[in-house]
Length: 240
Image 1: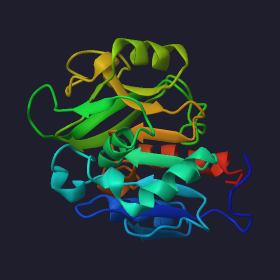
Image 2: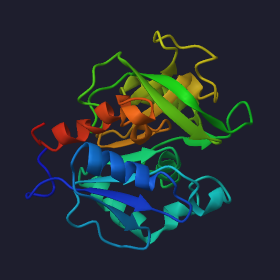
Image 3: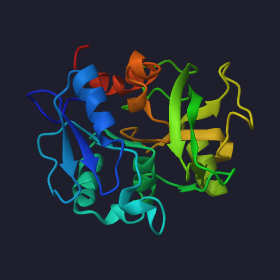
Image 4: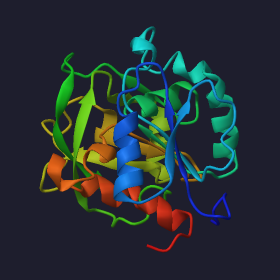
């Protein structure tokens, strides 16, 4: 796909009341990947001039009602849907994944962790699908080490939806051990089929519970997340 912005790629990071991963995302794209990046207020109604959009982690609107349930009605979401429908790459990280699910840009729901506790630790995910805007620079089967920080991270979908996701290759990543094995211990939040990330049919919209933007610098524990985020450059036909 060619870039939506002829003059070069630029990244929009949407910030909602309660977002706390927005500055992390800006740092990863702007400082580590060298891409023009700016925060976009949830009340803005235009995404003109942006090549890709990130919905960051946090607690939008305090997670009242359900995580992401209020953010889906923000003015910017109408524009985001149009952006996604035109093939624009969209990444929802943690709370951003929850917002995309609530907005029906991705199927399923993110439920309370099986432990009924907030999880904040490093985890491992195995890449299952590389045909997306956010994983094409990776290799199928490789294991990434990323941090998680969520209370409602247990992915759930009804049996028919789940079967369709599996059949069509829309499961992007699963929770695994460091050796790449699926286990109950590795899948601490209890996600169905150990699902950590999914994509829409076109592969341009991805929801991911772990935080790649918080694994973009050796100073904070690793760069595996940066390798994932770099995929969008290939998707936009930008030389790296």
